[in-house]
Length: 228
Ligand SMILES: [Mg+2]
Image (spheres, rainbow, N blue to C red):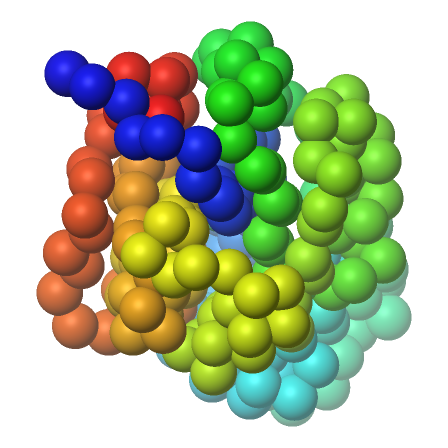
């Protein structure tokens, strides 16, 4: 197998370089238990959350604090009022995600060091700007990314803008990530090549758009060094 000559690798961060979604899932599960203890069926709680999450994400973007506020809004939707002590507890759960130490996935550091010696690397993430910057800063791999982009949304228009602003040659620029919708479908629509590295958990909002057909499908992050 031969490696691609020097190219630009745009690398997603959450659930590609480090764990992220698992913390949200844990809090979500704990919240469903809390609501169950307050007499709310899990299905009803899930539905209430989905409605609030959809609306709030569109309005306020991503991030752990907004996630906690969506859980609070779902509590209010279910109970007709937001119990103050419940709200305090839910917001503390959001802070637990916000402050969680970064856990790099297997072989990420050594793989990035190897790739950085041959290619131009750029970290391309989406989410709350300050929250994402803080995560990059404490990840221990920030020095391997001379360039970072924190996008409000990863859609075809955002990728097209990125390509134009940086003057990327799109035939030689690859987006690498775990999310079918954000990293693969949207980047491919903007003309980029794509590498999909599925993660064991992927956010439900990420599964709502067409089939995912990456140029390259890998099982692990370290396999990137076989191709690049
Ligand atoms: Mg991701």
